[in-house]
Image 1 (cartoon, helix red, strand yellow):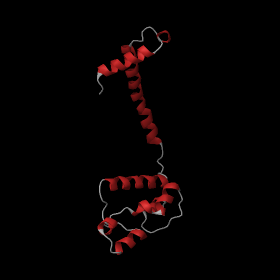
Image 2 (cartoon, rainbow, N blue to C red):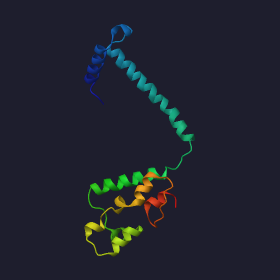
Image 3 (cartoon, rainbow, N blue to C red):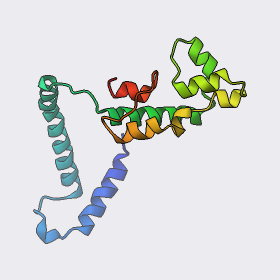
Image 4 (cartoon, rainbow, N blue to C red):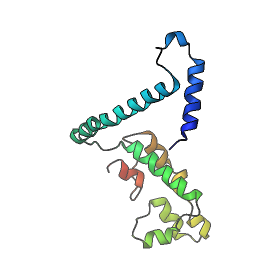
Length: 149
């Protein structure tokens, strides 16, 4: 909660910057603050109408391009915090690997390349983020799954 003194200073500044002839005589900083709080309280009461509207509205699935952008952002944020899980560990955990990840996994490359986010350089990501019916068909690719294939 904000400091009431900061609120008073804000309302004092707003009152000083306004044209007093345009304001009703009862518009003091305290009066303006009370009107603002009353308005906010009224808006909170109106939330019930939005809750009712949300309850009767049918849910639609998110567009594939939106799902792809969210997935990419989550992977990028995870990669910022440290190395990703190595491909052999991903495979052992039960997740399938796309064709490119599978090629990297079966080659003898170092741990750093095994933990690289290959989706960042894959054309399927680019198409999936920009098109809702992207022409991508790689098995085990998350961007293909977002397309509903």
